[in-house]
Amino acid sequence: MSVTVNKSEVISKFKTHAKDTGSPAVQIALISQRVTDLNNHFKDHKKDHHSRRGLVLMIGQRRRLLAYLKKTDLKKYEETINKLGLRK
Image (cartoon, rainbow, N blue to C red; front, top):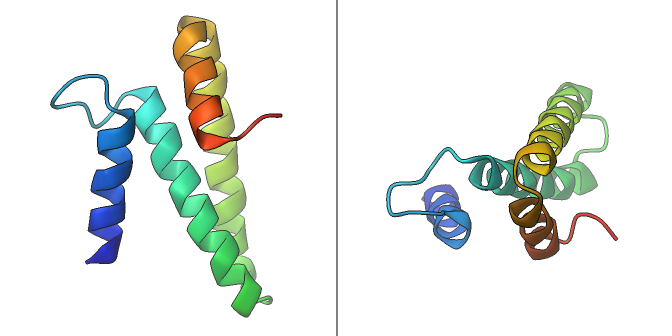
């Protein structure tokens, strides 16, 4: 139940129009949320290497989406990374 609530909160924070669930900014935000959840999971389960592989794949997907967003809409890219606190 809480995963759905968190997901809808993230979508509402990053959506560009009323029915937006798939724009790059929303996808990046959802992946970032999942990465944060997995990092918390690894604090308790240090030897869970199968899930760690999934984490690495998610980070790669997020990196590709960020590169696409930077190429297509620089303003939205900067806004997204500032909201998520990804780059310094």
